[in-house]
Length: 160
Image (cartoon, rainbow, N blue to C red; front, side, top):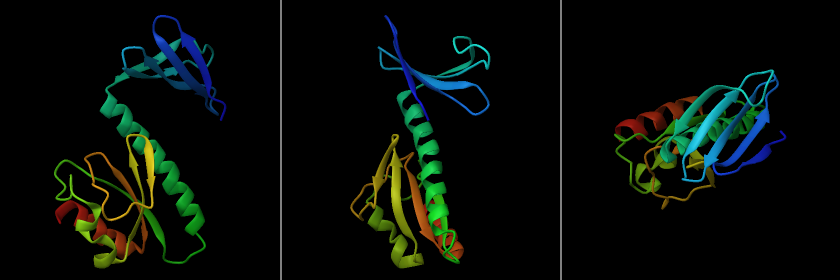
């Protein structure tokens, strides 16, 4: 993808790209620190069709969702020839018993044979996280295992 960056004097910086459908999607990073997600009309990249202001937490969560999906798709592709191996994503919610706890406290690998291969946090990837990595609300865990193991891991992360 070709990402275009444009200085917006007095406002900040616009970063966007053209989709296969001919629309521009991007963000405007305002000088004051806010982020705005936008979609332009297909025929005029300067005409905004939708604009959504995002808080820092919302921008990070959106980055986690999109980045986690991309990472999960790559892992799924890599494991598609290994029978019985599945990739899934888990979100750490505010009511998770493991929120603000080291990941090792959940004992996911020991209890269900599932490996947490990455954590998406604030738009960044934490690859191969160790048991001492503290889990935070909004973290997106990317896990690999059997279907049954992943179902068990989901229950553990929700209920302890």
